Each structure stands twice: as structure tokens, then as C-alpha cells.
Image (tube, rainbow, N blue to C red; front, top):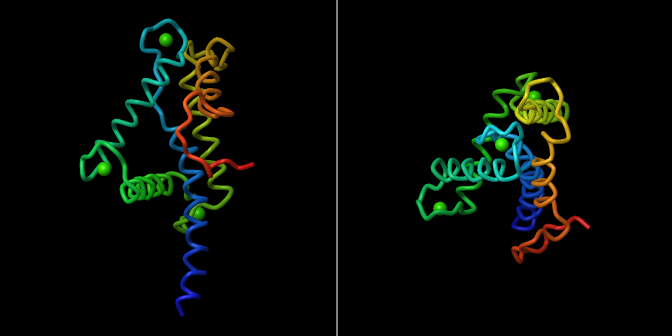
Amino acid sequence: MSKQFTVKSLAITSAVAAVLVSGVAFAKGNLTLSDTNGDGVISAEEITAAREASRADMLAQFDTDGNGELSRTERRAMRDARYDAMLLEFDADGDGELSRDEKRAAKEARRASTQTMLDVNGDGEVSAEESAGWEQVKEERGGKGGKRGKGRHGKNES
Ligand SMILES: [Ca+2]
Ligand SMILES: [Ca+2]
Ligand SMILES: [Ca+2]
């Protein structure tokens, strides 16, 4: 009995992990970017500020015990909420789950909205100048060995 249970929860865990990974990607796309200083581009600093603001938002919403960090449980609640929000928007066939296609649509929508935000002068294109800050942040974050290692291994997909 207990063995069976273990196998089952393993399967569930990997399903959750899959959701987690896509959740993180979506979370990134969820930022509200703006050209705060009005210089016509959204700089890496402005993106970082937006990320911090969104982090503060998340904490305000989901840091139930108010210790300034999101615990496992709190994170799970956040992911659930986010998933629900995505369902509302992207569950085209209404079956309560996001299919591959629906996830792709969601991702596309996020990408499109990011592009719209990056296109500060609104000419319908994201110029090199307009995307530079975004690329910089992406590079810093996606990093092969980001500049400050968090001492967290096991997240590498090598
Ligand atoms: Ca700016
Ligand atoms: Ca907490
Ligand atoms: Ca669906």
C-alpha cells in the first residue's frame, strides 16, 4: 500500500514540477514594464524595478505569515492562484486544464504583451535599443552561472 502511494505521489510531484517550470516562465511575462524616466527605452534597471515591484506585490498577496519570504506552501498557493488566473484567460475549451496548445497560446500572449510594452515609441516594432534592457536582464538571469550564485544546485538541466 505505502509503496503504491509513493509511486503515485512521485507522479504527482513531477506533474507539479512541470507546472512550476511553466509558471515561472509566465510569471516573468506578467511584469508591467514602463519607461519610468521617459528616455524612450525600458532599461535593465527599469525592468529590475518592475520585477521588484511585482515581487513586493506577490509578497503582499501571498506571504501569509508575513515573514518576508514565500514558504513552500505560500509558493504553492501563489502558483495555484496564477494557474487559476491563466485558466480563466486561456482555457479555450473550458475543460479546466491547460493543454499544450492552450499553454502555447498563453505564452504567445505574454510574449506579445511584453513586446507591446517594450515598444515604447509604439511603432509596432521592438528596436534593438528598445529590447536591449530586456536582453540584458534575460542574459543576467538566464545566466550560465549568474553573477551571484545562490548556492542552489540541482536546478541545472544538463
Ligand atoms: Ca527608460
Ligand atoms: Ca512567509
Ligand atoms: Ca483546456
